[in-house]
Structure formats: structure tokens, C-alpha cells
Image 1 (cartoon, rainbow, N blue to C red):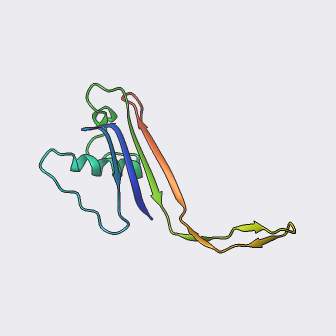
Image 2 (image 1 turned 180 degrees about the vertical axis):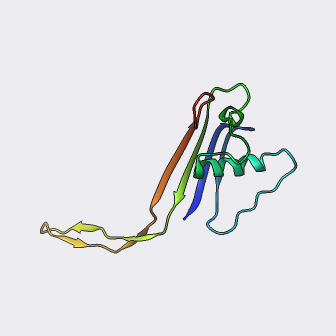
Image 3 (image 1 turned 45 degrees about the horizontal axis):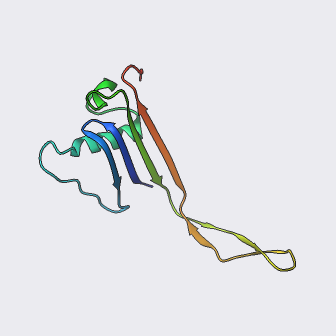
Length: 116
């Protein structure tokens, strides 16, 4: 299982942001104060519904905004999917199996006066 994508809105220093991740290794790099820790905090918040930096939800909302959003798509293991097609005589026959990865979507809305 891995985080396939992450979308941020008004979270810390990100007015908006969309990130795609690899199932292998992901490296975040950049100059100081570019948002690397904010990105890690968003991932942590999405998975645990807590921040590792603060207990105040207001601190995670971008300055002068009223709420923040974190949305993620989680890719779980792939599985075989069986599909059936109709023949001319109305019978259903199995078609070729195809890989269909199960996907879960998760979203968190952060409001300044909400309680954790």
C-alpha cells in the first residue's frame, strides 16, 4: 500500500498543491522554508489525523484562510478482475482478466475551532 497522490489546499505554506508519488522511493529536497516539512506533516495528518508539530488545528491552516483540505489517494495491492461479455446468443462468457488496482480516497478538512 502506498500514497499515490496528495492534494493540498490552504495547508500551511501551500495555497494549493498536487503531488504524485512513486510506489518505490520518494525524495523531498529543496531550500530551507520551501515546504518539505509541511508536506511530511500533511502526509502524517492524513494517515493519523494528528500533527507531529502542533496540537492546535489553527496552526495548520494557511494564514488568513478559514479552513484547509488534505486529500489523498491510497493505492493498495493489485488484484485480478474478472469481467464477462455477452455473446450473440445472450450468454455471458468470461473475458480476459485485467489488473485493476484497488484505490481508496481519503480527505481531511481542518477548521480552526474543531476539536481533536
